[in-house]
Image (cartoon, rainbow, N blue to C red; front, side, top):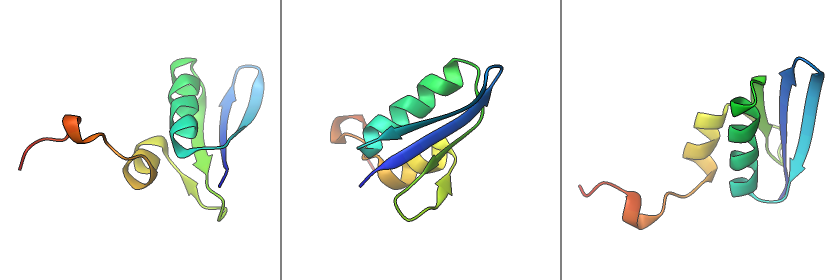
Amino acid sequence: MFFVVTGNGEQGAVAVTCETAAAAAEKARALTLEGMKDVLITDADGLQHAPPDFDRLFVTIPAETRSAS
């Protein structure tokens, strides 16, 4: 599965292809920290996700960081 991370910055639009969900989430965070606007992650089905939604849907939280319920 592949993912495309896109964003808009002062230099124009950026699109980066990532092979894993974790890599896409990390790239989205990096682009946001660099000041990019409208950062989205497109999945293999062509659906676009905002980074927080993508994290919730695709990136597994390690067991040791989950709160005990």
